[in-house]
Length: 291
Image 1 (cartoon, rainbow, N blue to C red):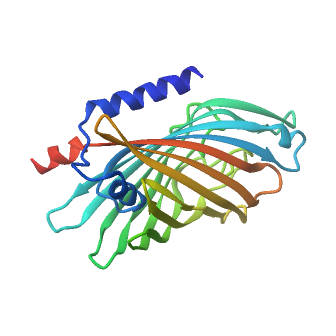
Image 2 (tube, helix red, strand yellow; image 1 turned 180 degrees about the vertical axis):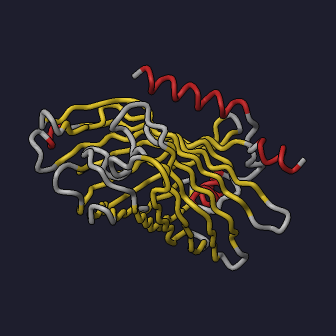
């Protein structure tokens, strides 16, 4: 609870430190812009996710975990009209299940996980077509053994989609290989420790409808395939969001629900319920680069 309160306080403090860059746009316009993965708006997104588990291991269905995931979106407009997006991801997990192969029992650990980084270069064209290319990476920053993959991973990614008057839809895909490190577990299945590398494909389909009033709803499932263990993770996903303006600053609040219809047999998340909060701020770093 202290970690959650501290993270929320930090988020509010960061949002207060920067002026909002939404100008005079309405909440409807901002909601549509935030639904676009190629958004020009800077936001500080905090995801609070609750997971319940299932699997063949003893007591697998008794396991629960909370994950705090901080993922700011930092767009850097370039002189050629394109944009460079930088999206770091910082996870903190509470009671992540860990299987002890010696005692053959499930335990749990809490702490910082592996930090991720997505970098994409692209644009949204006047006809609504959006594209970007770049790379995704994993850094072995886990504070405790078992909370990360013990590897440096890197690989290419791309994004294609379309923005219409009331919707945004498309696909984001990437693949990552381990380039250094021990590789004792998979970033998508860290609950089992095993000597292996990382070869992971992630595909996110997104279809978001923006009917008006600051509301948005749709689905953005992230499907992953671990080429080392030959295991899929496939969720059914629903999301609903509301953009509001508080004291002149836009905030987006949203709820997520995942049910994993395909998952590893031994132990894996079965359900995920998430609450997200994302204030819109000014990217002061972009100004520094511009200057």
